[in-house]
Length: 168
Image (cartoon, rainbow, N blue to C red; front, side, top):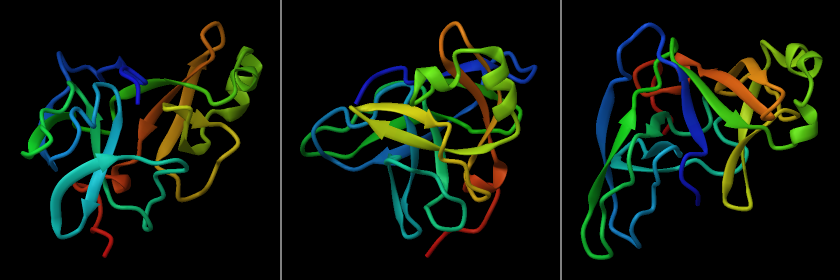
C-alpha cells in the first residue's frame, strides 16, 4: 500500500485530531501505513485491518476504526499497534479521486457535493470512487480541489464503532 493516501484537510476547529490506539495482528510489518483507512476486523476481534476495494458500507462492513496517524508497529511474530485518527464527523479529509477527470473542474466537484461514496483500492492506492455512490456509503463528499483532482469528505458517525452497533 502507500503512505499518505488520505490527509487531514481541516480539523473542525480543534488544535489537533485525537487518536486512539488499536491492535494490529502479527504479519509482515508494517501492514498499515500513515494515511490509510482502517476498520475493525470483526465484532469479536480486537485487531484492525485496512479497508478493501468498495468499502465502507454501513450495516454490512465492520465499523471504521480511523485513518492511520503513523505506520503500524507489528512484526512478523508479534502483534503491534496503530494509532488512528478518530473519524469524528467534524474532521474534513482529502483523498485523490479514482478518476482524475471526474473532478478536474469545479462544476464537476460541485455536482458531487452531498453524495455518499465508497473507497476504491486500485494499484495499491486508496482513492474515492466518485461513481460508486450508495445510500449506505460511509464517506460524504463536501468539496474538492480541481487543480489536484482531490475530493474532500467527512466520515459518517454511523460508519464508526462509536456511532453504531457492530456487525455480526
